[in-house]
Each structure stands twice: as C-alpha cells, then as structure tokens.
Image (cartoon, rainbow, N blue to C red; front, side):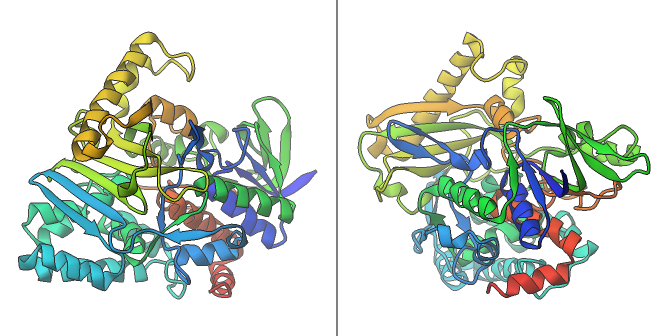
Length: 495
C-alpha cells in the first residue's frame, strides 16, 4: 500500500496535519513512537487526581477566536466542552521581594485599567505595550486570516527587539517589566532572548480570553482519536521511525521502522525535534550548512516538576494559575537559580467531575545540566543518588509553595516529581527542553519546506510552543502543501 502522506509524530501538530490532509481527500498514515497518539496530552492520575502534562489552559479558544476556529475546522469542537477561567484574574502574579500581587484579568481594556491602577505613573507605557501586542497579533498570518503570508511574516517572530529591549524602551519600572514578562514561563525562553513579536503572538491570545477544557488534555486526545478514526487515517502506534527513504532521483519514497518494515508514500510531514530529523534523513540529502543550523538549535529551558495531592480542596487555584517569583529579577536567565529561589508556576489538578481542585502541578525552570550526571540512565532504572536529588528538590519546592500558600501547610498528602531527564525521555527532546526548540532573536528555525522534494516540517520548532503553536504549525505545513489561500478560505468558513 502506498500513502499520499506519512506524518511522523502524533503530537498536536502531527494530528493537525493528518486531519487536515485527510479532510482534503488524501490517504494518510500517522506514525507514533508511543503506544497512544497524543501521549503528552493524556496525563496521568494519582490517588484519584488527574494531572495534565501537556495542556493546562489556553488563550484564543473563545467563540470566534483563532483556536476555536481551528478546532471547528479540525472537527474537534463537537467533542469538547470548554470553560472560562476567572475573568477577573486568570493568572495571579505573586512577587515576594518586593511584596506585590496582581491578578491578570482578561480583556485588553480591563487589563489596561487594572495595570494603570497598580502603576499610575506608567499609564502611557502600559497603553503603548498593549497596543503593540494587539497590533503584532493582528499582523500574523493564521491568527489574522486576512493577512497575507510570506517569508517575511514567518521570520518576524525571530527578528526585531527582544521583550526586554521593548520594555526597557517603554519604562524603567522593574516590577512592571517583570509582571509583563511573566508569561515567558509558558514558552521557556528568557525575556532577554525572545522576540517581542513571538511574545506578543502568545500572550495576546491570553489577553483576549482564557479557557480550559473539561477533562483537560485527555479529553482533547480522545477527541483526536475519534476524528482520526472517522476520517480513515491509518494510525501506527508503538512504531518508531528509523529513517526517511529517498529514491535515486532525490524524491522522497517512504519511511522505515526501527523494528523492520516500511511504509511507501509520496510525501512526509515530520514533526520530530530537528536534531532527530537529522538522524532520519539520509546522509548527503541536506546541505552541510543546513545540518549545522539544525544541529546548533538551542532548546528551551527544562524543568523540575511536582505533582501534589491535597487532603482538602484548593479554591485559590480554581480557575486561576499562580506565578510565584522570589524577586522581580528572577525571570532573566531561566533555569539558573536553585529550586526554592527560582520562579515557579502552579496549576490546578482535579478529581473527576469536581469543580474545586484537590491537587496541583508545580513547574520550576531548571537546566538540563542539573541532571547530566545521570543522563545515561533511563526511566525506571535511575540510581539511588538520582532519587535523593529528586527528594531534595521536592523538599525545597514544597517549602516555597507553602510559604506562598500557608493554607497548604500540613495538607499535602502526596507529592511526586519529574526532572529534565524525565522530560527528555517522554518528550523526545535531546536536552529535556520543556517546549522544544527555542524561538529567540537571531536563531534560525526551520520552515515547513525542505530541500528534499516531498519532505515537510511541522512541530513546535517551526512556529511556537503550546497547543496553539502546535496547531498553527500543522496548518502552516498543510497550507504550504494545499495553498494558503485555500486554507484561509476553509478556515474562514468555520468562523
């Protein structure tokens, strides 16, 4: 059997690509190394509490907003129920030094008003920042379906000023700059490195609206299961791709599996990490300069994560996330501070059908170098020294969390942790990057087209991280194949 397309990797970008191509009449195979599609979306449960590992909340899912349109186009919306986070404070910024708390509301007007009340001398800077965020979002293709797409529009995410440079040009207020940079924790790149355009494309959707999905990432994964089955996409799980095969004339001819066997096809969309792509492509098919670029791509920061169960409800995390900052300067050089003195993100975890959380997930930026002593080990077979390291990290994290949330002191009945090595092994990122490859000023990131005829790229490395970024990358790859005008027309029909 010969397929029109084989999609390598059944994460959100791969699933988006497979659904889009199948909806357009192509015969598609979706290949995944794990035993289920969307493995990172599915999460896990402990003591009756479900922990989301790949989806916590999202912007752009309100009625008529970009992600809502994308989910309608992909046929997923009918299987999903979304809910609004607290519109008066979907994210809560807590700084210990100086002591300061700010509830970030949805809606540009309300956010501007609230920021102006907290920083009355900075109203002009706040207005300028928000207007530039909104203008940047409106200038990005697919976030604005009327915007033409070209090479320059794709490149602007890694061009121009960094977030730090932009904010420095607007204000000298360190606390305000820290607050407006808080969401760099959601894409794992320091405000000193990420472009303002990339930052704006992510936070701009949160400023419009913030929603979750009932059942979390697991519900989204199950919706994808249903849609792929209905469209007749052939799904191959527990199937690791070992190579992309190229015919003597240079055109792509198929993929081969590590376990033996192969699939013949006319084209491939690869959603794997760029360094893994280099291992799959035959020697000599990419120019040395291209291989060097992909091989040198920096990853986003990794993380130490905790998963905790409380013996009582945690209403303060219902419909709102917490960003805990020891001081206003801790968002520079993410990962370089020790756990307990580093920024920390907290998100709720729920028991089935309950509206108040009984658990939480904590994410602390951490460098992969923290765990290089054990990098040759694998999950389930780590040495005792590694387990002691995890225990010490959990203790420091718990102290920081209970300092910020005294109501949790004595109520945490279970806590487990994961390290950069865990992320490396489960996310298939060579250095445990929490959000894959960095999108930072000056760093080349791959485009959907490649030098191999019939090989296209998608995934977080192409556009941006998160569910929105992954969906966008799949649509961008398919738009490259089908024609962006056709894609935009089909998406507009779902508005």
